[in-house]
Amino acid sequence: MAEEIFSLSNEVHLLVVDDGSPDGTATVVKEIQSRFPNRLFLHERFGKQGLGTAYIHGFSYAIEKGYEYIFEMDADFSHPPKDLIRLYAEAEKGNDVVIGSRYCRGGHVKNWPLGRILMSYFASVYVRMITWMPVKDTTAGFVCYRRKFLQELDFKKIQFVGYAFQIEMKFAAYRLGFKIKEVPITFIDRVAGASKMTKGIFKEAIIGVLKMRRASLTNREYYRKK
Image 1: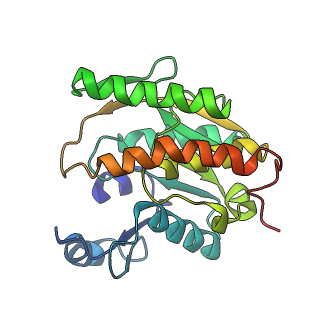
Image 2 (image 1 turned 30 degrees about the vertical axis):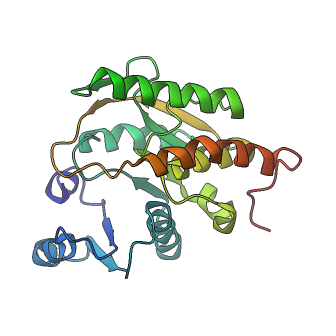
């Protein structure tokens, strides 16, 4: 994954946030860092602190270091690295949140069983019904954020660390009036790694959407940093 990302542009940097993964992620990153000096970074944390906190850790690092465009993506090749260029191009046009979308016009899902596709698709339908967000793929984890959105977002207001985290980030951008754009991608079932999806994470998303909507219902600026 690192090699493919770095082949796209010399300006791309990669941060890996590892919470003591038993698969040896940190060890592998350390082994290849010498091949990509000043481009590949590793932050190790202790204990399983949740996907959402890892992303926020990365966002905070990117803001501190002055990056203008910040991407999140899965490292199992379900998100095609080459599509980073397409997300970047849309962000350069002035869009604040650019989503690699499975469910907008032109988007596709490959190698998923029908049941999982339906669960994922109707989860996004449910989110749109509750939040009124004009986003087709509300649970997408392949996203480019412009710095100005992340700078204005109060990370302490983001409640969820699992599946609902992706929804809440998009909802916060929508409520704060930032420009959101979906770019169609072909999502391919993971080439490597194992899914971290659990019933508990899915339940968090279902209930979390209602909590998000209620928290910001009377205050559109709820997610903005004071």
